Length: 455
Image 1 (cartoon, rainbow, N blue to C red):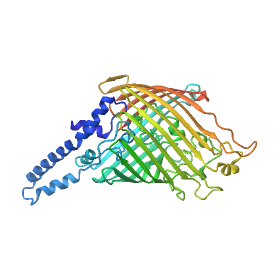
Image 2: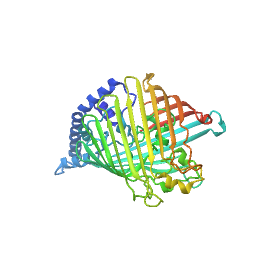
Image 3: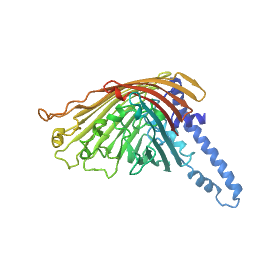
Image 4: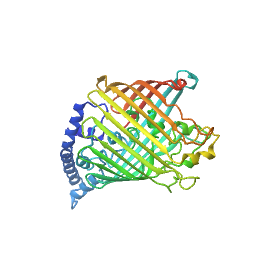
């Protein structure tokens, strides 16, 4: 029962059955008592060992206490998830019991290492000369608990295997923050953290989503992996509601490159700052609500709004982004859907100096998807889950009127069908295969293979 409690606290597969979810909720209620029993046994063993090793010690229990303090570790809850298991933050399985999680901090190591990564093979069906095999990303995570209520979390990411002036790779900090549990319900987080937007941004490990590549809506519209510097407060309530809100850095429209296609691929992805000498004259407000009050069901949404010109452009501008999402895992099914929309204000004044360039700043952009997966076959540690996803996204839904002959035309909505399967090898390794078909630009049709891991 203790092993089951710890496993369920650290995060479970999103393909759980409803029966497993209900079992998880029951085990959570028992976790506190079980972990406290283990902690008491450990203290007794440490006291006996200390007494045997140093019989002349005046206060052997003090030595045992010091040993226990040196081996405390963070709990893994909906508000204080370790880097190795961020899926617990956005899981549809319901929040873990905070009191049980707090007790687990007394019995585990203070420092925890984690990692995830993926290697992907992509073969365009019409342009096979562009076939690529890529170590898309490799991430190392570190979490250290300073005391039962305070921890430091960091993740270092390397993209495309090699990073140098002549190579395509990138090295970046994905997260670096301090979190303090204020009471049973509320925690505060400060530093560089993932924004609570959509279903994927806080849960982007290859074992946490279907398909070789991340979906287009949550990369082109919501710029996953999206992180900002700031402070946020996270509240987990007994009714299954999670509240996140805070103030952070935002985007920088002065970085917009109208001569490249980067802005057409992802408007916000092309102007994110990632806390690298980030302009911070204009800050942003954000918030998210997620409800997991019914086993297997997650319903939520997020909103972000912040200035983006920092007093350095011809006109001030504000960027807003919001989304609504839901996920339901009845039995063997895993069903999810999401819609997201972004807007940029005062684009007419910003675009006038850019007329004649191929990529002007859009006034609005949006996207949606619906996805269904089914756990078809399970044997031992192996699980086969075929899936299908249908999505539409438009990175230039509308442009501000610049006058006859100058106003950019709205971009077409690209619609993509992805059909494939995830084959889980144990809890931390996944093999993936899928085929993607594009309606507007069929030259992008492709076949993908992937290998991913997370621990």
